Image 1: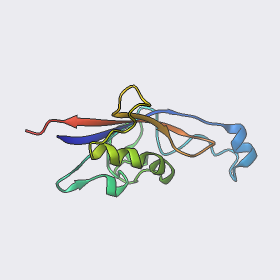
Image 2: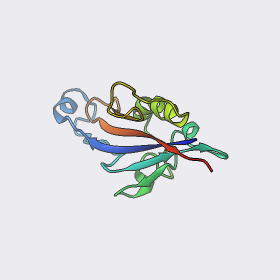
Image 3: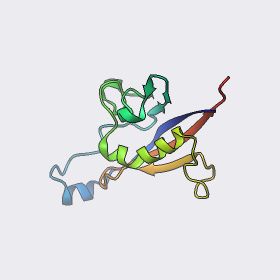
Length: 132
């Protein structure tokens, strides 16, 4: 069995009152690295190892210019997001259970980056492919 991992941006939140109170740029706005609906596929086979390149060029769907999206052809994933998603991506690529007993399906996880004033919510899915 071969395993891939699909990452989808489900939502982006913004807490302007927290940005006003705590951020150096009080008008920083929503996360500029991702867009709702962005999709990424991670693979680990042969010459391709997306995990060790922080997901550079894993973007498969976006409503924006791919060159401006983290995980696109020019930027790896944001370090705050990568810190939150990397462990689940690695587990999924190895065929492991991402969140057994917590989520409805053990191959799926919902998580978010740690930017407290503008978090991005991700869905991570382990995809199991039959190898012929």
